[in-house]
Image (cartoon, rainbow, N blue to C red; front, top):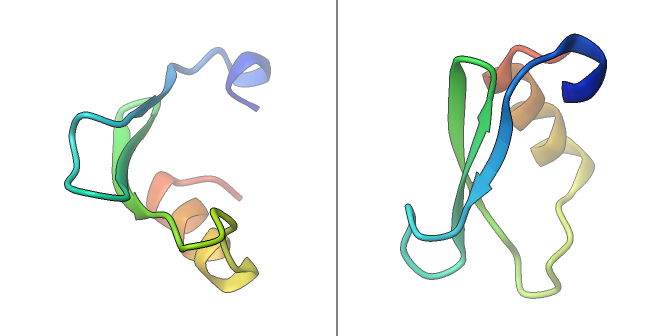
Length: 55
């Protein structure tokens, strides 16, 4: 999606504590906490998309 829209996308591991990651999409960013399995639940993915202005 970032390539299609020409927006910057980056996942930064060093900007969070423990299993937290900073995700940058265009001029917006959010923090994501990875679960024990490493998978994100669909509701959480929808929340992250809203925070990043996707869909």
